Length: 160
Image (cartoon, rainbow, N blue to C red; front, side):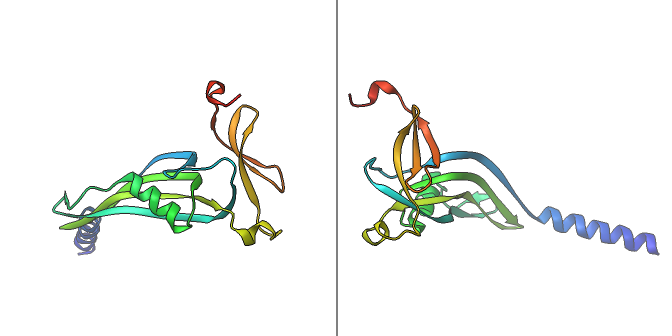
């Protein structure tokens, strides 16, 4: 009798696990991501680590739309009224529950926004500038000198 109960319990757990499933795939880790225009002469501040998503509903495995990675990045940046994401993690994934599910993209990153007038005199707000740092474009802290690399600079495109 105990063996029958154990088999029934195992089948019930296995069926539940197969009916309700989900997965997530890491697309990549990026030092800096943006879909916005930036200005090199502007100072920026760290708003915080935020997340944005673009996901669509699925019925019987058929998506009711098309998730867009750019929209997920935009939503993350816009959540902090920012311009850049640093230390960004991009993921795709979804879940399903028998007939319905959800698929799409999730973006998490440190949002940087342009410094406002009140922030300029506030010593508690760490300010960053986009600068050439030893041949690489980087966000450099005006307080500590800490640099967050953005990309390699092609010296031929820099003004002389």
